[in-house]
Length: 240
Length: 395
Image (cartoon, rainbow over all chains, first blue to last red; front, top):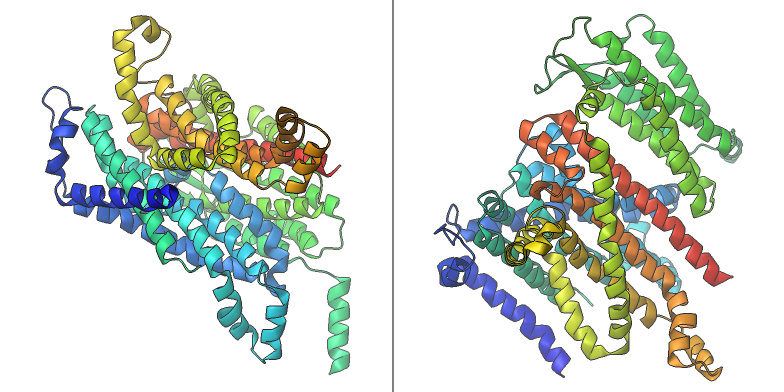
C-alpha cells in the first residue's frame, strides 16, 4: 500500500517543483541564494527557463526520434530472412554505440558539424540506439510462433503481419527501450553545452565558469526533475 | 524457367557471397576514390583543404587502386577460409596506414613551416569499412570471448608498433602527441580515476543489492535515490560535489593536503562512485531475484545455512549479471572521467577541452581517440570475463 502510494507521490512532487521552477524561479531565490558567494546572482536570468527547458527537451526529442526510427527499422530488418546475415554485426555495432563515451563523440563531431546543437544530437543518437535496438529484437522474437502461423493462415501478407501483428505485440517492449534511452539522454544532453548547445547544461556551465554553485544546482536539479517526470510520463502512456 | 532459377541457385551456393563484406568493400572503394584521404592545413588552427588519393599519389595511383580493389575482390568472392580472409583484411589495414603516413610526406612541402597534414574523411571511412569486414569475419569464427581480447591486444600491438616506428610522424596527430609531454601521465590518471571509484562502489553496491533482493521496503527506498543520482548530469554532479569537498578542505586542512579538494581528483572519484552504484546494485538485485527458486530450495534441503547459500550458490549463479553491471560501470566511468577534464581532474578530457577551446581538431582527437580506445578495451575485456563466468555455471 505504502509502496503504491510512494510510486505516484514522488513523480507528482517532482512535476509540481519543476513547473514552479519553470514558471517562476524567483520563488526559490532564497534557497539558491544560500549557495551563491560574494553577492553573485542566485538566479540564472540570461534566458527564461521555459525556453531553456524547451531547448533541452527538443534536443532529446529529435535525437530520440532519430534513434527510434533507425533502431526499430534495423531491428525489423535483421529479424527478416533477408537481413539475418546482418544480425551479429548489427548487434555488435549497437553495443559499440553505447561503448563510445558521449563526450568523445561530441568532441569528434565538432570539426564535422560545428558548434551548437548538432554535435550533441549525433552523440545522443548513437548513445540512444542500443536500448531501443535490443528491445526491438527481443520484442519481435518473443511474438509466439502460433500467432504468426495463424496470421499467415488468415492470408495476411508479410507487410500486414509486420504492422498488424508483430509490431503491436512487440510494442510494450520497444517502448520500454525508448523510455530507457530517453531518460539516459535527458541527463547526457547537458554535456552538449560544453560545445554551445542550448539547454539546462548552459546554466550548469555558466555556474562552473563563474564559480557560482547556485547556477550549477539549479541546472542539475532541474535536469533530475525532468528525468523523473518524463520517465513517469512515458510509463503512464506506454501500452501494456 | 525452373531450370534457370535452379542453375542460379546452384551458382549462388557455389560462390556464396557475404552481404556485409560486399557492402564494406564497396564502401572502401568509394571512400578511397570519392573522399579526401588527407587534409592540408596551412597552419594548426585553420580547417584544411581535402587531398584525394589522386592528388597525393599521381601516376602510380592506378596501380595502387587496382591492387586494393583486387584484394577486396578476393574478399567478396568468399571461397577463401575465414582465417585467410582475416589475414587479407589485416594486410589491407596495414596498407591503408602506410598509405596515409607516406602520403603525408608527399603532401607536406619541404619548408613546411606551420603547415600540417591531417587524416581526411576518406581515411576514416576506409578504416570503418575495413573494420566492418574484419569484425564480420571475426564474429564468424564463433571463438571464445578470450579470443576477442587476444585479437584486440594483437591488433593494438601491431598498429601501435607501426606508429611507434614513425610511420605517422608526418601527420598532425603525431605532432600534437609529441608536443604533449604529459600524455602518458594523463593516460595513467585516466585509468586510475576510472578504476579507483569502482572498488568502493563494488564494496558498497553488492551488499546493498543483496539487501534489496531480501526486502521490498529497502528496495523501494534505495532505488529511487539511486535513480535520481544517475539522472544528474556529470557536469552538474562535479559542480555540486565542490560544495561539500571545498568545505572539508577549508575546515580540515589535513584532509585537504591528502588531496580532498573541491577541484581535481576528489570530486571526480566521488561523482563516479555515485554513478557506479545504480548499475551494480540493480544488477545484483536482478541477478539474485531471477535465480531458479528450486536450486535455492535444494541448497536449503542439503542443510546449508543462509550464509552458505548466499556465497556458495546464489552469488556464483548471479555472477554473470553482477559482472555485466560492473561492465556498464567501467565503460561509463571511462567516458565520465573525460568530462572531469573540465574541472581539472586530468585524464584525456584535458586534451578534449583544451582542443575545443583552441579549435584545434587534432588535439581534440588526441584526447577523444584514446578515450574511445580505453572504453572499447574495457568492454571487450569485461565481455570476456562475463563469458567465462557463464561458462563456469554451465559446467
